[in-house]
Image 1 (cartoon, helix red, strand yellow):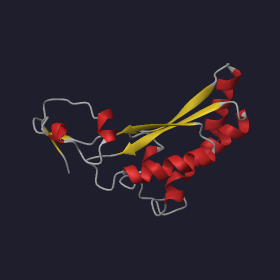
Image 2 (cartoon, helix red, strand yellow):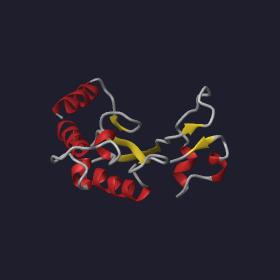
Image 3 (cartoon, one colour):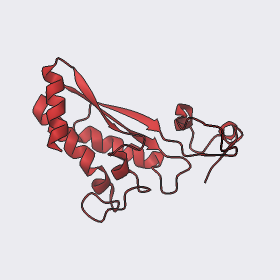
Length: 150
């Protein structure tokens, strides 16, 4: 974890005001946060929210310790994973937000990683639909757009 803290420290020395820790999409940190991807059985495993958020919390705390209270830390993560079995739910993301804030994050950047299968496979589609984050269920207009959901 210290390498992330060291990188943030270099950013501050380069006169950056803060960093955004990307735990969204399907990047490294998100694979710990999501029960769909995290299959670990150790202290970073899927069994508890504390375990799932441990890696991100450790990085936030290290960045905060190295850079002080005036250095901004933004925690970006998937606040929902519609269409993914055992994906992050909005209720879980609220808990994650509180955990990241308690660890020292100054701001939360919540996004949606939307898992879809197109009816016509040769067509490509963006998996990022930010308006879906405002709905508890996949909205009808998105389902009507030609996507199937698990």
